[in-house]
Image 1 (tube, helix red, strand yellow):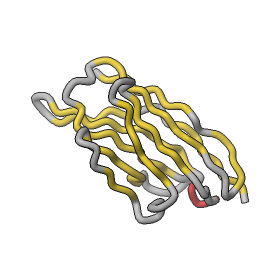
Image 2 (cartoon, rainbow, N blue to C red):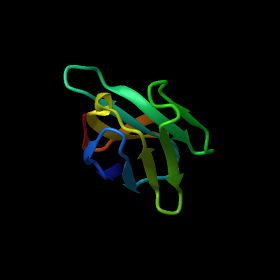
Image 3 (cartoon, rainbow, N blue to C red):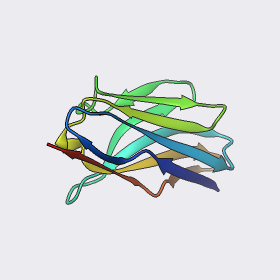
Length: 118
């Protein structure tokens, strides 16, 4: 099992910044990717950004140039730096970890609310 603890959400004005953190613990071996998803009210959960164990990153088009995903392997933590926030970034943000052992398994954090006021 992998446990994920997220932090860093909150209320911010448009144009502001927030940094989300997600610390992984437990059976963290063979984690191949760490990702951030978000889900706004009435919408499907969408991938925001991901980073592989090798450091490759990918982003949703809507956040490119504004958000940066990074990881600290020593702390088993993934971060999402969010700049130039817009009201449409308002959502619950979820940390996701993909672990490959005998099978591929996804683990999810509890979610953290990000609210951007106009």
